[in-house]
Image (tube, rainbow, N blue to C red; front, side, top):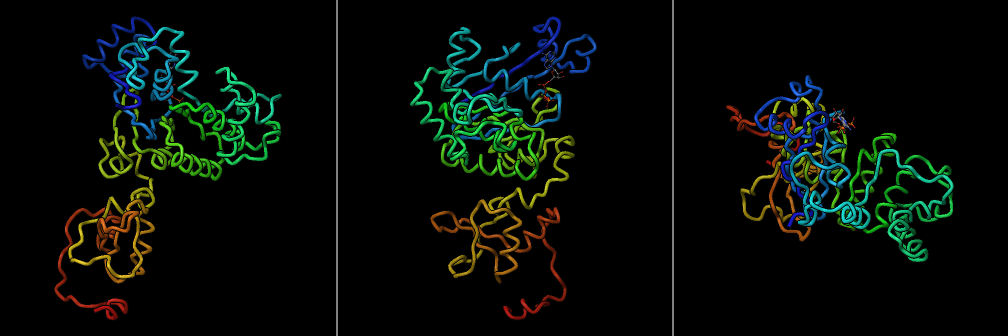
Length: 360
Ligand SMILES: Nc1ncnc2c1ncn2[C@@H]1O[C@H](COP(=O)(O)OP(=O)(O)OP(=O)(O)O)[C@@H](O)[C@H]1O
């Protein structure tokens, strides 16, 4: 069972929302509705998020990301459609049941995390547990653990204003992790941070995720962030999900010109991995030599570097050392050059470089 499922979700603000859903289903556009003073913030969004996955919702300002997120945790009631959390229909719960689910199973991390200025870092991290009614000693233990996970051991007694912006954001993350919630909803959580600190936080989240295996919905307007973090990415435009897929799907097979224009500036060699470019080995015994090999998840840029050092296609091996494919140099060069056609033959073949002569 999926941890989270959005099933034909709509959110319409303004007059006669139900009528507007009917019109949207009938093919009317968002702009036509707006002329009536009605805003279709989310239109027919469906997706599933599996346990342990990072699901990223990416889109420009006004595309409907925050509205979608607020429906996922029950803060906003959908105009139509359902949200299933562990198979339970959130839209069918009473306000009291919904509050219990939100307090115990869902944690939010916002862009500007509001820390309490007159509480210590430890008390701030323990806040979610306090709301849950956990005893002081237990919540201090769990908050200290979460702070340590987020690299803030030793800062427990400090005040928020003694911390940098990045550290404050980590306290927010620690607060979310301390509650043991299965589902983390992160709304532009790193957007207010400087680029280097932001990257650091992304790395830290990925590192934490390897251990904790939470289910995370992460909202961002930054495609690079989406590609770094997302096991699965939904690209939103004007309230609709226009593409749903992995970073590789989006880079290699953009669904339309809009998505294609987004990915123009993405460095594919740093996002796509050996797995995306490898082929089946042609000769038996490939990868048996002592030459450098790469893991399936190695970025193409690093595979290029290895390829320049070994005299044959780069072997791709899984974590048990089993050969899963090879990456010939021609494929790497074709990939960087965005070339899909097969290679052509030379009418005067033969070694042309010192390296080729040495290995001829
Ligand atoms: N309470 C509301 N009443 C009326 N319209 C709203 C309301 N909340 C959001 N909207 C509209 O719904 C649309 C989607 O807004 P939303 O905040 O979900 O987008 P977003 O992608 O999260 O944008 P941002 O990145 O700027 O936060 C916008 O046109 C917004 O003006």
